Amino acid sequence: MTTKGHFASLLAFLLLTGCGADHAAKTRPVRSALDEGDTPRALQILDRLLGVRDSDTLPRSMASTNAVLVLDRATVQQSLGRIAASKRDYEASVEKVPARCVLTRHTTSGMPR
Image (tube, rainbow, N blue to C red; front, side, top):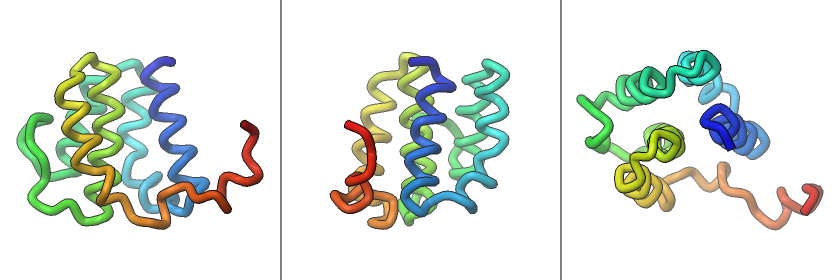
């Protein structure tokens, strides 16, 4: 799957699970950079949204908004082959993503398997 495909899948997940409108608006520049094939710029934009100096830094707060942005950044880092950084971001965000953003049995019941 391409970088754009990974991010599109993540965005669809977030939109379908109620973490959508604000997050989608906030990350529009990230999606634009990915659409243009400029993955490094997408990573820089995510870092700026997180208020960190670089992609090797986690935000001070892992409040729900930042947790979802770190999850986005993990996907972009993975697509750039930055596996260790991606793993760190996934691990830092996995327990902090708001419950409304987590697929439950109820929300997946109508999805094809």
